[in-house]
Length: 493
Ligand code: GLN
Image (cartoon, rainbow, N blue to C red; front, side, top):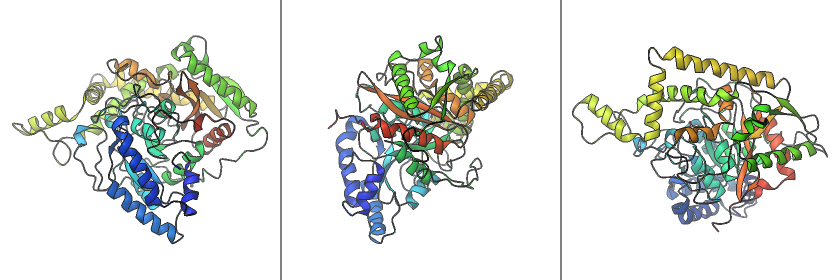
């Protein structure tokens, strides 16, 4: 049962072959057994989950259920959920019980989904390996000596280890797509503004966006239908007509369902010089996926994103600048961690922050405060904003020549725990293919495209603004003819 996708689970629930309580209990039992190894969940509360499952069963019995009613989902611990401990992977919020729901959580509740627990993540979503979490690293279910990617590594590992059928993630520079790639999942970062950020603890507000992490494009579409939509409580939420992403999955059919689709291949990803950044085994799998796309009728064209090479540098000015401002609210006064001993107010602030934040978070706050300070603002922050505009313009030009852009999601498969932990720049380069998408505010996906030495690799699909439905359709067509997304880590039993 638990190896099936969301549609099969919904059918089983609707057909009364299993109740939501039974299904939830199956997952809770598996979490009990395997979470001590994987560390995918920070907080599990069986009582709360089963109460939601009972309510869902009552709805289903009354014939009032929707497609997600009774389905257990894992929620990244960045989303405030009323009555749940919500830590954001930090000691700073280790004792924080949220008094309210994030919009994403409220929407899933309204759809009758069951919150299975809060998943582990890099502290305040800063990281690419889940090693910055105060609650310890997450292990990749494909090889527990390796990282699951980050920052949504707990969500990725939970789904990959079949501890949950699907999960939420957030992506500021790659945190949905990169862990999806490293754990063989399908993950979607929507266009900035499509999913509400209300109640989602802010890292870099102009980049943060929530999205689904699941086994297939079909499941992602179903989840996005619930997650997306205007929210007046988020000033950057976009007011536009709702879309039915599931209905558009089969928008194209037939023998060559993608006939006429133009896939742009950035020469900066595939060119002879630059490709050294990507490991040859991952590149080979990406090329094989492109061959599959050509069989589906798509055509590939070379495009150029000349400012792509500046994206990591620009991101590591802009994201820390916004983080240093967002994280100033954690002062130990109203909520969160407060140092036990201090001499006066200023000492309380500084001791609470010194003890409550981990090393990576402190590094970002320091860089952010520096690039925003008088005398450096023009040289760093404004310059980075100019590069951000150039990157966005590159994409606008590229989408005149193609419908979707493809390339690797991550330059390598899952690396060893500890391998990059001591070298921040190496770690930052894990997101070399994903960061530009956030800087431009575009939608991006990662889909499984094969195995290299037993480890999964991801193909990245980048769409034009509001191209989620198209991306999901393009991913779905590939998943109809290939089976990579159906493979799962079986070493855990
Ligand atoms: N790895 C990137 C960082 O550390 C992106 C993280 C994210 O998308 N949340 O900032």
